Image 1 (cartoon, rainbow, N blue to C red):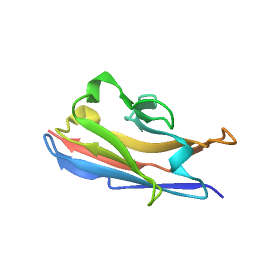
Image 2 (cartoon, helix red, strand yellow):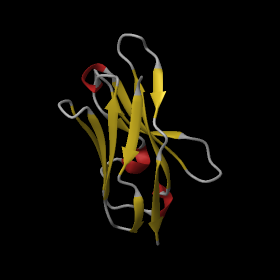
Image 3 (cartoon, rainbow, N blue to C red):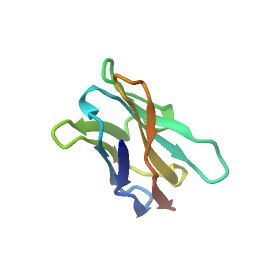
Image 4 (cartoon, rainbow, N blue to C red):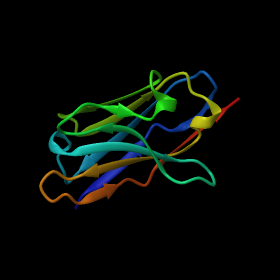
Length: 117
């Protein structure tokens, strides 16, 4: 059974940093397409960062130069380093994986990030 578990969220002041982690079990991050999404209160979930198995990383414009997505294949863990955080970065951050062979999508339960001004 595939499980994605996010961690690392919390409350931080504007300008601060957080590193989110997403630990995967039952699937292999090395070959999966991996993503970070977020959902702010009252808004739709949006794609923040992409780390496809084949291809380059990509980010929404509002986080370019501040966020960095990476993975550790040995630990089967996806990361999102978030620097220079802004109040508008507040939301629940979700890890999303599309399994390489089945193309099935999987989601974590999310981790709350709150940035105070």
